[in-house]
Image 1 (cartoon, rainbow, N blue to C red):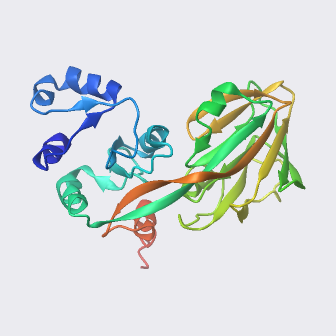
Image 2 (cartoon, rainbow, N blue to C red):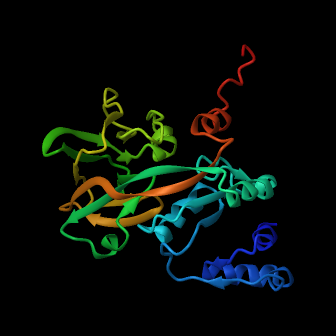
Length: 275
């Protein structure tokens, strides 16, 4: 349906190489009806990127978009879909609006990460849309995360890990660990401990202009660092610096949709019989 819809607008279509192979293998007859190419890199010459899947697919899509500013359209074939809000039965009407420029752009801030010593694998794509998290590795014991904000000591979290979430990520991992929901345009990060040993260790909302430094200690020599769904193993002598990224990701939002509307639908707010 999507290929047919885009073809009807005479759009130039470029598919991610692995997805193109999948389409050709699974739907060869259908794929041969349409003209498309593949891409290796996305730059500002592209008009938009269409992500088909769930929110996790969009998190992978941003690694293609990077700093290009190309807007992302999210078609939801997953479960929850805070980012991928267009349902499959809405494809035709949604793209009619998009090709008629009847949509909004929702700018989403990101976090960037640097390490000392430098981790080469991490430095290639060092940003995340949802969150950065440190967590224990190869142990059931807690870790201690020494945390500084703008070089001022905050505390040492004894926990299974620590999440630094953006407003976009506030409805993800952080929310499941008791963090607050933050609207996308709010200029904040939230620091959320994962299963803290001290019950008075609560999520903390800070300005996104803050520089955050983390240092992990634990019984094992290594710990895990995740940027959205990308995992890295770092040694305990590593100092992590987290800041707001210098660029944003543009999400296409239909005029009929809004974050509050999505929040209400996805979290079933107002579904109580008393309402």
